[in-house]
Length: 389
Ligand code: GDP
Ligand code: MG
Image (cartoon, rainbow, N blue to C red):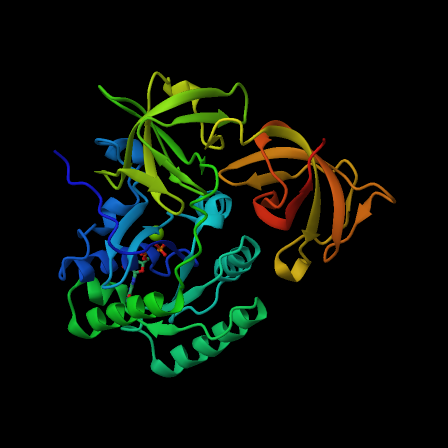
């Protein structure tokens, strides 16, 4: 039988972010390498981290871009994204569940456009805590690294991230087992342990899990994965799928995390749920699984939307009623039409009330945050303020 998951330490969800080629995947592999030497992880080599989930599906497994590890005090699920577009799609839509982020910045290159965008988006979607891995320190001149560190502190403070630990590391050196850089990765993990607090989990609320991925496990059925946003779930519970079309209810016949069975999944866990009698085609990323009767899908809502300025990466020109951007809500993105009321005009930098009509119904509730994107870039961020009665 598979080894069961024991909830001995607080569980946190973190992820790497930062500009392409600054060393996110190398560092992710290096962390598992360093911790595997102390029994806190299974080493996951670089070329295994970007593998497609279907290829790796064995048992009830979860999306392979997650790795898990343990420090002395915590259990972590860690997300690493292959590219900028994946970052936006996977992290931004699911980022409400990221308790902290490791911002990877190459000391050789310094702040680059995706460094800026990821910091901005992390703030917008509510990632409360950031730790910087100033990477490639093996190859960078220390004085150059000092400069990069100063600029980074400026950038982070500008987005409300104060007192951020900056740790000089070499993912590559640690992966090669070099003692200096192994110690640096250990220092980085200590900084994460110390700086990212254990979040308050809403385990008492009705169960809610935004679907990230759906897999078919031969001989067992359909498995749905995602981070539990609220509540708890156990074998035998009935869950309701809401959004994007016809909903259904199903009984949960298995709950796992990282391939290990759990008695009960709870808010914050990276969970895989086996659903009885559900066909793969019935479930899609972007649905939510919820305690029956607790969530409803909507196409219309009113929202408060902040339009980013051009220097924040936003639009140069105003938007008008009839504007049709893409809305990123939890794990989905759908097109929508914006009605601004009044003079029907909003300028970059403004925060406005708007009515939105989505192209497809999505599980919504007041207070839910979302990102507004167009042409592959984030132009705004908003919050659902009301749903039609
Ligand atoms: P990602 O796109 O941010 O995931 O970056 P990768 O982890 O794929 O690394 C990009 C490149 O930088 C690869 O050629 C790595 O070998 C190299 N690299 C990563 N970490 C380090 C480091 O600490 N030192 C040096 N010198 N090179 C590194
Ligand atoms: Mg990578």
